[in-house]
Image 1 (cartoon, rainbow, N blue to C red):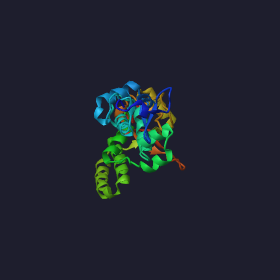
Image 2 (cartoon, rainbow, N blue to C red; image 1 turned 90 degrees about the vertical axis):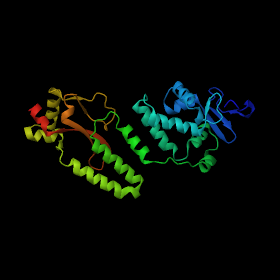
Image 3 (tube, helix red, strand yellow; image 1 turned 60 degrees about the vertical axis):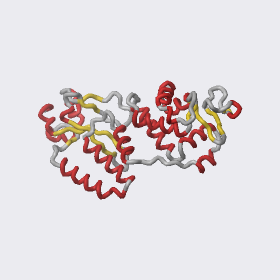
Image 4 (tube, one colour; image 1 turned 180 degrees about the horizontal axis):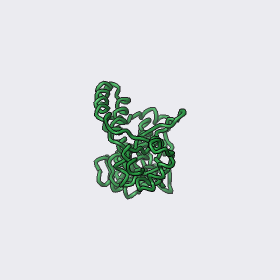
Length: 267
């Protein structure tokens, strides 16, 4: 901060000036905030310049308080339009982790001061409001073709878990949702489709590729990601859904399922 004299500033990292200790708390440089949030320093600087009211007594905006860092991370996690999905998910996790003891305590811990006392003194809590819950779930499903009613169900269950007092209202809404979606055509796995043609699931997947309805997911990063991606031609015959593994595996996977009408195209 421009209004603090050098005599009151204790540099913990003389090479990078990443932290400044003012009293019993530390402050973080834009460079360190950039490293922590996985965005460029220019992004951090631009955000601070556009939101000077978030940082009290700021003159040169070289250092961030815990409050300012929280605002920046929340922006990157929920509001930024040109931030990659990986960066958004990283900052959502950072919000969750820091909610245990607060961003100021996080800065202090990184600076190596007051780790025990700060954790006891500063105990802010990230309030998981319904809007924050639904916004976070929307971010998780960005770019994923999952039926809206499935996403709605995930949101309702998440809100009900955090706000059990809303249980009866959510159960009523879920009942209406189920009634209005029960009549929709059943989605089937390639193995289930194969039973209609006396073919294996592997051969059905090959047929779906050969007829231009799906392609192999070459960018699959983990077993949670779907093995196949529908083409524009195939998108009207399928939908992504969520499923869990078998034999005690509670991991949630993306699974591409097909409507029975696709049999008219591949048979």
